Amino acid sequence: MEVVEEHVNSLLHRREAKLVVHHEGAGTPDRMTVRKLASDHFKTGMDQVYVRSIATRTGGSSALCVVEVYDDMKSADIVPDYVKNRNLPKEQRVSKGKKEEKPAAPAPKPAAKPAAEKKAEAKPAEKKEEAKPAPGKEAKPGAAKEAKPSAGKEEKPTAGKEAKPAGKPESKPKA
Image (cartoon, rainbow, N blue to C red; front, side, top):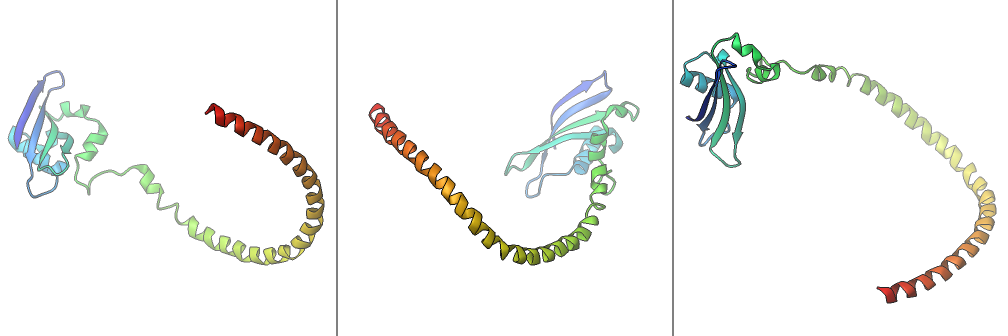
């Protein structure tokens, strides 16, 4: 471990340091390991050391860590709760309230699935009944619909065909 930069912030009663932690052959060190190394180096308790960030370059074997070392526990009250939570071991961390609500939500979903299956079973029977009368009904209105649109289609395409050829030769010479 190397101390790259160290700054004393007398207003907040803390030392702000940037450390380089070498970890060849291993993954990026976790916050607890960095806290332990920093507390040993600065000769303070782990409860006065807070790791703000740990960054390792891709494929690198050294991590740049930003650490805050407080003079006493009273001055450490300024540290935000989320930073305190991050610096705890995984077993002691407080999870968000959203995670607690998620397990309750899946319970109603399985109950909804059987209802959906019942509806799905009822629908095929209805579809068979609808399918038989529907072709007969479609044939009658279809004939009426074909007569009306065909007249409209004859008028529109002729106008469209006349407009398109006139537009195409004009656009090609311009381009």
